Structure formats: structure tokens, C-alpha cells
Image 1 (cartoon, one colour):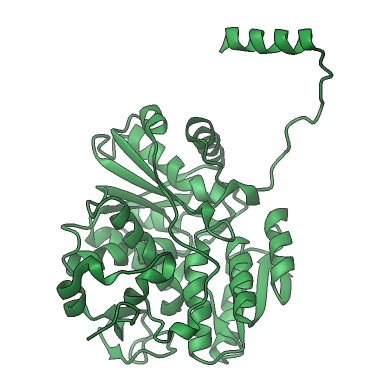
Image 2 (cartoon, rainbow, N blue to C red):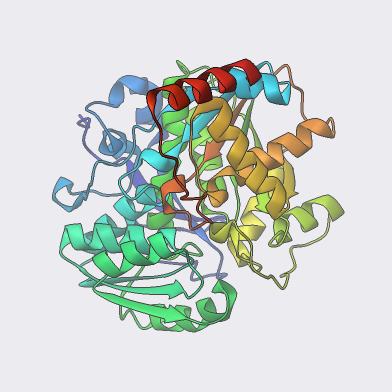
Length: 411
């Protein structure tokens, strides 16, 4: 009988032509070049149900993750992030019920830790001595941290305009930190050629099914935290599309296994300055790269999501999903609003989902009577922003009391 710690991964399947392969380090289909997804033993999932999940933390989901040997499973304590009821923010937006899945409590402050756990574990599983990633910041610090935890060398290629806290984190944890000029799209094609030579394990977001599988646990956690009564709508960010694809797949997998009655409607959120998926979705056309500039949502700065972006579009269209974007000022306003109403300090990349939700609700594109969950992907503690004034005031007892009383009167 399958134990509760065994992986139920059974094959890799091509999402384009349907060809199947035994689990192994494979980045695309030999037959057509299509992207691959991991597929699991659904019969066992149906028969044993959620009771199959035991233990605590991220690796309680080992049966639906692709790491066979427990000795290869790497952890810094990721997962088990809060799903917060946000009544004041819900009233502000005019929504009946709003949930925020706050990923800023992960070890490196970002959702990337979920995929770093499976990526670095897979690097060990397949015998690699080094990992690598091209990053605007969060992925680099996360892969570097998990690689260090596993005793692997990490080649982190980081965006030169990444925020200072992210650069400090990467410089502390990466064995090899290299800054690149330009944007993510300028380097990723060159880097992919080195991946083909197997100089290091691919920890990028574009092709590796073992990496993006870790973010599938977002769906499983949301389902568990709502008592298997999933939200009507889930808003997920899209850069290359890893969070969106993995979360959507997780919900579909649970639905196929009979763990949940239906998968939520998925909403793709992008920054307006990097919005190729939104443009294609609105026009009904094929995905086309866009030339991007700087956006405060650094983690969404990808103008050419390639085949993963096409996968996002397909999932949106098949599942009657929705897509929207937000300008930088709208993203920053969402950041302030979330902090003031619910006490959650998240980074701009993280709150782009909330900014998009506000716009879609204002446009009447979503039903405010539904339960809506928003994935907020990063802490604000890795944000680089202008500091408030450091000018202080010297108080005596009378002036201190006067200030407090006056403030209370004007509240």
C-alpha cells in the first residue's frame, strides 16, 4: 500500500500533443517541443482522499509532489501560510467575502519558496551539483537560499535594478551572483542555451515541470483552509505564468480526484507595463511579446512569457477565466490600502492581484456577492521605497498629551 510520504507522480505528459514519458529530468516534449506537466495516480487520490495528507508544512503534500526519495526533500519551513479573512478590505472594495493568501510569511518572504523547494530537491534527485535562475529579485534570493540549504552551488543572474533588500539577500546566499543589464527577456534566451548543455539545473520559470509543481501547493492549502469549500474566484499573478498555471492545475487535480466539487474561476493579474497575456485575452488573439519598461511590480516584469504564457491563456479560455492589469500608481495604492485596512505589508509585486481585483470589481466584471481569494505573493520588507521623514520631536509631558488628544479629536 502507498504510504502517506510516497510521491504519486506517475508520468510526464505533453500539454500539446499528449505524448507521455516516465518521470525524469525532461524540459519539453521530444515529439513536438511542447511543455510537460506531471501527472499523478488519481485512483489512489480518489480512494484515499485528503486523509492521504499527513504531517505539517510544505512536504505534507509529498504525495502530489514529484520528489520520490524523502532524503532529497529540502526545506526552510516554507508553506502553511495564512489565508486571511479581510472584512475591512472587503467592505472597502464592496465584496461580501475576501480572503488574502499571504505568501510573505515564507522563509525568504515570497511565494517563490514553494518552487525553490521542489526545484532544488529535483536538482538533488537528478544528481546536479549546481542550480541557476534568471531573476528580477525574489526568485534569485529564494533559489540561492534553498541551494545553500542543500549544499549546492547557485548561479543567480539578477536584474541590475532589483531592489536593494533583494540584492542584499541574494549577495548573502548565492554562491555566484551576476547582475545583468536590460530586462528579463533580454537574457533568458541566452541562459536557456546553457540549460540545454546541462551546466546547471534549470530553476527558471519557463519550462521545468519540477520547479513549478511546488506552487501547486497553494491550491491545496487554500482548499484545506476553507474546509474543502473553495472560493468562487481566485486571483493569481502572471509574469511568465508559473503561479497561475500551478494553482489552476492544483484545483483541477483536486476536482478530478473528487476532493472538491468544482475548481474556482481563475483571474490572471498583470502589471499594465508588462501585460502580454491580458492583451491577448482581451483581443481574443494569440499571445504576442510586448516591449516592457520598468514597473514597481518587479516580479511581473516579463514581456515575453512564451509557451507558459500560452498555457495561461488556454487555461483562462477553457475555464471561463478573466484577466486584468493595473498601472503602477494603482498597485501602490493597493499596497497602502492593504496595509491600512488589514495590517498586511506586502510588496508591489504581491499586491498587483489586489489592484487588478479592485479594477475588475469597479468595472462590474466580477460578482461582489461571491467569495474571492487573492494571492499576495511577497512581503513588503523586501521593497525599496522612499522613507518617511526622519525628523523627530522633543516632548515633555504636556506636549505629548496635547498631541495625542488633538490627534484623537481629528480621527
